[in-house]
Amino acid sequence: MRTLVKLEILRVLRNRKFMFFSVLYPVLLFLILTAGQKSSLVTYYMVAMCAFGAMTAVLMGNSERIARERDKGWVRQLRLTALPGRGYVLAKIASAATVSLPSIVLVLIAGAAVKGVRLDAWQWGGVLLTSWAGSFVFAALGVAIGYVASADVARPVAMIAYFGMALLGGLWMPYSSFPGWLRHIADVLPARPYAALGQAVELGHAPHLRDVAVLAVYLVLFAGTAAWMYRKDTAKA
Image 1 (cartoon, one colour):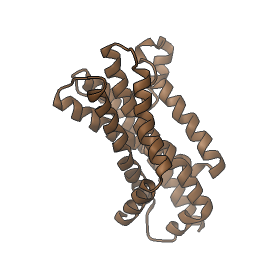
Image 2 (image 1 turned 45 degrees about the vertical axis):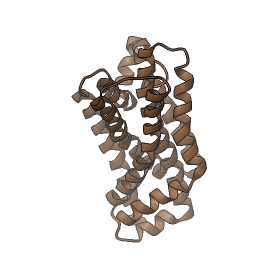
Image 3 (image 1 turned 135 degrees about the horizontal axis):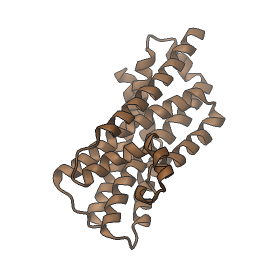
Protein backbone atom coordinates (compact mmCIF):
# COMPACT_ATOMS: atom_id res chain seq x y z
CA MET A 1 0.00 0.00 0.00
CA ARG A 2 2.91 2.36 0.69
CA THR A 3 3.99 2.13 -2.93
CA LEU A 4 0.49 3.02 -4.08
CA VAL A 5 0.38 6.01 -1.73
CA LYS A 6 3.72 7.31 -3.06
CA LEU A 7 2.54 6.83 -6.63
CA GLU A 8 -0.72 8.67 -5.98
CA ILE A 9 1.07 11.62 -4.34
CA LEU A 10 3.52 11.94 -7.23
CA ARG A 11 0.71 11.81 -9.79
CA VAL A 12 -1.17 14.63 -8.07
CA LEU A 13 1.93 16.79 -7.59
CA ARG A 14 2.68 16.55 -11.31
CA ASN A 15 -0.73 17.98 -12.16
CA ARG A 16 0.21 21.67 -12.17
CA LYS A 17 -3.26 22.95 -13.02
CA PHE A 18 -4.84 21.05 -10.15
CA MET A 19 -2.12 22.15 -7.73
CA PHE A 20 -2.54 25.79 -8.77
CA PHE A 21 -6.32 25.67 -8.33
CA SER A 22 -6.37 23.72 -5.07
CA VAL A 23 -3.49 25.63 -3.41
CA LEU A 24 -3.88 29.24 -4.57
CA TYR A 25 -7.65 29.50 -5.04
CA PRO A 26 -8.49 29.37 -1.29
CA VAL A 27 -5.84 32.02 -0.50
CA LEU A 28 -7.17 34.38 -3.16
CA LEU A 29 -10.75 33.83 -2.01
CA PHE A 30 -9.70 34.52 1.59
CA LEU A 31 -8.11 37.84 0.61
CA ILE A 32 -11.19 38.83 -1.42
CA LEU A 33 -13.71 37.92 1.31
CA THR A 34 -11.78 39.75 4.02
CA ALA A 35 -11.21 42.99 2.14
CA GLY A 36 -12.40 45.75 4.48
CA GLN A 37 -13.71 43.30 7.10
CA LYS A 38 -13.37 43.59 10.87
CA SER A 39 -10.57 41.65 12.54
CA SER A 40 -13.00 39.13 14.09
CA LEU A 41 -14.42 38.26 10.67
CA VAL A 42 -10.93 38.07 9.18
CA THR A 43 -10.02 35.35 11.68
CA TYR A 44 -13.33 33.58 11.05
CA TYR A 45 -12.76 33.52 7.30
CA MET A 46 -9.14 32.45 7.72
CA VAL A 47 -10.25 29.30 9.54
CA ALA A 48 -13.13 28.80 7.09
CA MET A 49 -10.84 29.07 4.07
CA CYS A 50 -8.45 26.54 5.61
CA ALA A 51 -11.35 24.10 5.62
CA PHE A 52 -12.53 25.20 2.17
CA GLY A 53 -9.06 24.81 0.67
CA ALA A 54 -8.66 21.33 2.08
CA MET A 55 -12.09 20.36 0.73
CA THR A 56 -11.11 21.68 -2.69
CA ALA A 57 -7.96 19.58 -2.78
CA VAL A 58 -9.37 16.29 -1.51
CA LEU A 59 -12.91 16.23 -2.87
CA MET A 60 -12.69 17.79 -6.33
CA GLY A 61 -9.45 16.06 -7.21
CA ASN A 62 -10.27 12.59 -5.94
CA SER A 63 -13.73 12.04 -7.40
CA GLU A 64 -13.12 12.80 -11.08
CA ARG A 65 -9.66 11.24 -11.11
CA ILE A 66 -10.90 7.93 -9.70
CA ALA A 67 -13.87 7.84 -12.08
CA ARG A 68 -11.52 8.31 -15.06
CA GLU A 69 -9.15 5.66 -13.72
CA ARG A 70 -12.07 3.24 -13.63
CA ASP A 71 -12.97 4.05 -17.23
CA LYS A 72 -9.37 3.54 -18.38
CA GLY A 73 -9.05 0.18 -16.61
CA TRP A 74 -6.44 1.20 -14.02
CA VAL A 75 -8.67 0.36 -11.08
CA ARG A 76 -9.48 -3.02 -12.66
CA GLN A 77 -5.77 -3.81 -12.74
CA LEU A 78 -5.49 -2.97 -9.04
CA ARG A 79 -8.46 -5.21 -8.29
CA LEU A 80 -6.59 -8.15 -9.83
CA THR A 81 -3.82 -7.72 -7.26
CA ALA A 82 -3.92 -8.66 -3.59
CA LEU A 83 -4.72 -5.04 -2.60
CA PRO A 84 -7.79 -5.14 -0.28
CA GLY A 85 -10.59 -2.60 -0.51
CA ARG A 86 -9.54 -0.82 2.67
CA GLY A 87 -5.98 -0.52 1.33
CA TYR A 88 -7.20 1.13 -1.87
CA VAL A 89 -9.40 3.58 0.02
CA LEU A 90 -6.71 4.41 2.59
CA ALA A 91 -4.16 5.02 -0.17
CA LYS A 92 -6.50 7.46 -1.92
CA ILE A 93 -7.37 9.26 1.33
CA ALA A 94 -3.71 9.50 2.40
CA SER A 95 -2.52 10.89 -0.93
CA ALA A 96 -5.35 13.44 -1.09
CA ALA A 97 -4.83 14.56 2.50
CA THR A 98 -1.13 15.08 1.84
CA VAL A 99 -1.93 17.46 -1.00
CA SER A 100 -4.38 19.43 1.16
CA LEU A 101 -1.64 20.59 3.54
CA PRO A 102 -0.13 23.33 1.30
CA SER A 103 -3.46 25.12 0.88
CA ILE A 104 -4.05 25.17 4.64
CA VAL A 105 -0.54 26.43 5.36
CA LEU A 106 -0.75 29.21 2.76
CA VAL A 107 -4.07 30.49 4.11
CA LEU A 108 -2.61 30.63 7.62
CA ILE A 109 0.48 32.44 6.35
CA ALA A 110 -1.70 34.95 4.51
CA GLY A 111 -3.78 35.48 7.65
CA ALA A 112 -0.72 36.21 9.76
CA ALA A 113 1.48 38.09 7.26
CA VAL A 114 -1.11 39.97 5.19
CA LYS A 115 -4.14 40.34 7.48
CA GLY A 116 -2.34 40.59 10.80
CA VAL A 117 -4.17 37.74 12.54
CA ARG A 118 -2.67 37.03 15.96
CA LEU A 119 -3.17 33.71 17.74
CA ASP A 120 -1.24 31.74 20.34
CA ALA A 121 1.18 29.12 19.07
CA TRP A 122 -1.08 26.24 20.15
CA GLN A 123 -4.01 27.81 18.28
CA TRP A 124 -2.06 28.05 15.01
CA GLY A 125 -1.07 24.42 15.39
CA GLY A 126 -4.59 23.42 16.40
CA VAL A 127 -6.21 25.09 13.39
CA LEU A 128 -3.69 23.45 11.10
CA LEU A 129 -4.19 20.01 12.64
CA THR A 130 -8.00 20.09 12.78
CA SER A 131 -8.29 21.44 9.23
CA TRP A 132 -6.01 18.73 7.94
CA ALA A 133 -7.41 15.81 9.96
CA GLY A 134 -11.01 16.77 9.19
CA SER A 135 -10.28 16.77 5.46
CA PHE A 136 -9.95 12.96 5.59
CA VAL A 137 -13.76 12.81 5.68
CA PHE A 138 -14.06 14.65 2.36
CA ALA A 139 -11.22 12.68 0.83
CA ALA A 140 -13.24 9.54 1.60
CA LEU A 141 -16.33 11.16 0.08
CA GLY A 142 -14.33 11.90 -3.08
CA VAL A 143 -13.31 8.25 -3.32
CA ALA A 144 -16.93 7.13 -2.86
CA ILE A 145 -18.22 9.51 -5.54
CA GLY A 146 -15.46 8.46 -7.93
CA TYR A 147 -16.38 4.82 -7.46
CA VAL A 148 -20.14 5.24 -7.69
CA ALA A 149 -20.37 7.75 -10.56
CA SER A 150 -19.08 7.55 -14.12
CA ALA A 151 -16.36 9.89 -15.38
CA ASP A 152 -18.94 12.18 -17.02
CA VAL A 153 -21.09 12.39 -13.91
CA ALA A 154 -18.46 12.42 -11.15
CA ARG A 155 -17.41 16.04 -11.61
CA PRO A 156 -20.90 17.63 -11.50
CA VAL A 157 -21.90 15.41 -8.56
CA ALA A 158 -18.72 16.40 -6.70
CA MET A 159 -19.28 20.08 -7.49
CA ILE A 160 -22.86 19.99 -6.18
CA ALA A 161 -21.70 18.31 -2.98
CA TYR A 162 -18.69 20.64 -2.71
CA PHE A 163 -20.48 23.96 -3.14
CA GLY A 164 -23.56 22.85 -1.22
CA MET A 165 -21.57 21.73 1.81
CA ALA A 166 -19.32 24.81 1.68
CA LEU A 167 -22.38 27.08 1.74
CA LEU A 168 -24.19 25.17 4.49
CA GLY A 169 -20.97 24.77 6.44
CA GLY A 170 -20.65 28.52 6.91
CA LEU A 171 -17.45 28.71 4.87
CA TRP A 172 -18.60 31.63 2.72
CA MET A 173 -20.74 33.48 5.25
CA PRO A 174 -20.90 33.38 9.07
CA TYR A 175 -22.87 30.44 10.42
CA SER A 176 -24.41 32.79 13.00
CA SER A 177 -26.30 34.58 10.22
CA PHE A 178 -28.22 31.41 9.28
CA PRO A 179 -31.88 31.10 10.30
CA GLY A 180 -32.59 28.46 12.93
CA TRP A 181 -34.03 25.84 10.57
CA LEU A 182 -30.97 26.09 8.31
CA ARG A 183 -28.62 25.66 11.26
CA HIS A 184 -30.35 22.41 12.17
CA ILE A 185 -29.74 21.10 8.65
CA ALA A 186 -26.13 22.30 8.59
CA ASP A 187 -25.36 20.70 11.96
CA VAL A 188 -26.01 17.17 10.67
CA LEU A 189 -23.98 17.59 7.48
CA PRO A 190 -20.19 17.13 7.60
CA ALA A 191 -19.00 20.59 6.51
CA ARG A 192 -20.36 22.50 9.51
CA PRO A 193 -18.82 20.21 12.19
CA TYR A 194 -15.61 20.27 10.15
CA ALA A 195 -15.40 24.06 10.13
CA ALA A 196 -16.41 24.15 13.80
CA LEU A 197 -13.29 22.20 14.80
CA GLY A 198 -10.92 24.99 13.77
CA GLN A 199 -13.28 27.74 14.89
CA ALA A 200 -13.41 26.29 18.40
CA VAL A 201 -9.60 26.33 18.54
CA GLU A 202 -9.51 29.87 17.17
CA LEU A 203 -11.78 30.96 20.04
CA GLY A 204 -9.49 29.28 22.56
CA HIS A 205 -11.50 26.12 23.17
CA ALA A 206 -11.06 22.42 22.48
CA PRO A 207 -13.12 21.00 19.58
CA HIS A 208 -16.57 19.81 20.66
CA LEU A 209 -16.94 16.05 20.98
CA ARG A 210 -20.22 16.16 19.06
CA ASP A 211 -18.49 17.64 16.02
CA VAL A 212 -15.77 15.00 16.22
CA ALA A 213 -18.38 12.25 16.53
CA VAL A 214 -20.38 13.48 13.52
CA LEU A 215 -17.24 13.57 11.38
CA ALA A 216 -16.20 10.10 12.56
CA VAL A 217 -19.57 8.69 11.51
CA TYR A 218 -19.30 10.28 8.06
CA LEU A 219 -15.72 9.04 7.66
CA VAL A 220 -16.79 5.46 8.36
CA LEU A 221 -19.82 5.85 6.07
CA PHE A 222 -17.90 7.29 3.10
CA ALA A 223 -14.84 5.05 3.43
CA GLY A 224 -17.03 1.99 3.97
CA THR A 225 -19.07 2.75 0.87
CA ALA A 226 -15.94 3.14 -1.26
CA ALA A 227 -14.37 -0.07 0.10
CA TRP A 228 -17.62 -1.99 -0.44
CA MET A 229 -17.82 -0.81 -4.07
CA TYR A 230 -14.20 -1.83 -4.60
CA ARG A 231 -14.84 -5.32 -3.21
CA LYS A 232 -18.03 -5.62 -5.23
CA ASP A 233 -16.15 -4.88 -8.44
CA THR A 234 -13.39 -7.26 -7.39
CA ALA A 235 -15.91 -10.10 -7.18
CA LYS A 236 -16.92 -9.38 -10.79
CA ALA A 237 -13.34 -9.27 -12.10
